[in-house]
Length: 424
Image (cartoon, rainbow, N blue to C red):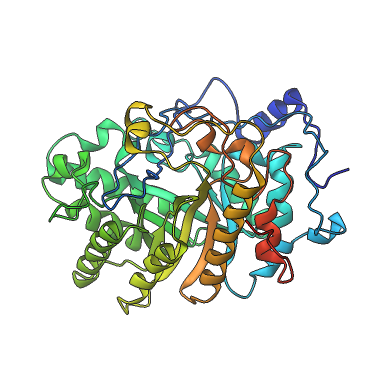
């Protein structure tokens, strides 16, 4: 039997999930909105922001009977030998893991087996965002976050919080009233959340995606609903200061996407430097790295080098790594037109091996850069990835484990120094 080919009863999963995190009526559980921030995958010098699926499935539903045939890598050897291999390979360099939903970590969910076998850190795709935790003013739902944090502690994993402030997950009431009223409301929310997990969560994405979507803009800050309501970018400082006051020992991050592009990277570094010059307690920089198979891995690593070149001793986290097999134009993301053709359920070996070479180069680069302290994939297995639904519905293959929950060529390329990636 394959290591991760686990039969799953949907009824059992639902029952166990309800016991752990609660299902159905009562309390103040928010609607399950689950939009996940993402990047565009164009390779032009002026990248544009995509339009992600507003409601990706918050409860990934695995194949109840994964096909165990045809996925064994000929160089893999004894399947039991990979237990703990991913986390152990990089144990002296950085934590490794991925973003999940709480429902993936209960019962016999196949992703749970992967997480417990291979990860030593966790993140959340959506259940830590403001419109999930506090959809109404003064009403909090911590069930999912509590479950994730407790699971991480029970399994000796570190967990990072994503994210306290993101313009796309901000409930409307946050932005009502005068700037002073908005500040007070934001500070109250952040104080409540950070205090609840003080000493339990070390790393926090305080603000997410505050860089402009216009790579040619002179003002590096995003023209967001927060900027419009406050009338300035002061909300960023308010958020960091409130989080630091609630837990002075926490590492506080800014996080953004498309930092592999030089223009966006320069704007990101400008904002970071301005915040540091103002004395904002920023201790870490997150690079999302939603990539595609046409990316130059050296441009990705250049984003980390640019952070290091600020000479501010900033911690670097790779927060949302995935590697799409499609390189769609901006029209695909905005209007779902001119998208690359669907590969279907079987990816050509040549593309899989191309992905493996990119990932191998990236992980070698991460290891060579001591500022990198955590590397997270945006998901666990291909079956669950948001890229199967965005920008259009089609098969994508962006993660370390395949639809049968088996390690892919990439896995062996980064964990076995003797593994040879097949040539093109």
